[in-house]
Length: 183
Image 1 (cartoon, rainbow, N blue to C red):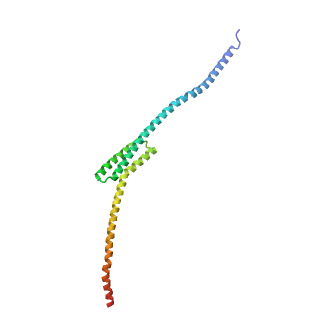
Image 2: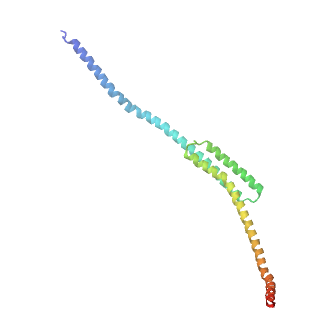
Image 3: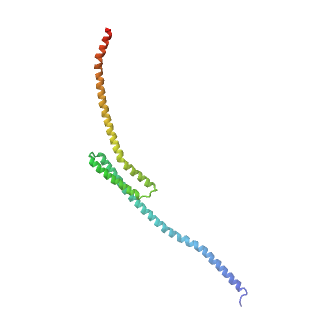
């Protein structure tokens, strides 16, 4: 004996099966991504972390190299200040110029829109103007010493003139006084 509503039962079973499969898919897809995405994110984060570590390592090495060039420039400037011979000073200034040029080469490696680029650019600008300011200071000191020497010689000359004035005035003032009495 066959059931009378066999078609209806088959249709209801198919509908329930489709609904069940749809419900399982709706639950299974988020579960798959919930468990699979953290692994992928961990891989992406690990790659990004390694990239950041490499950049920091490169930055650290770059900063060491730049600092070494800066220290070299400072040492050359100190040697320049102590040196008396002009030829040796010119050689030191040439080596100093080479150090600042290498510092500028390092500056080209930095991205232009960063604060670090502005900082390094200002450091290089200061180092480039250092010799000019030092030479100007020395010239001004020499001019000041010359002015002081001229001032002292003028003071001595003025003192000798002032010391001679009473000797010159006494005889003439006495004669002038005598003439008034006679008149």
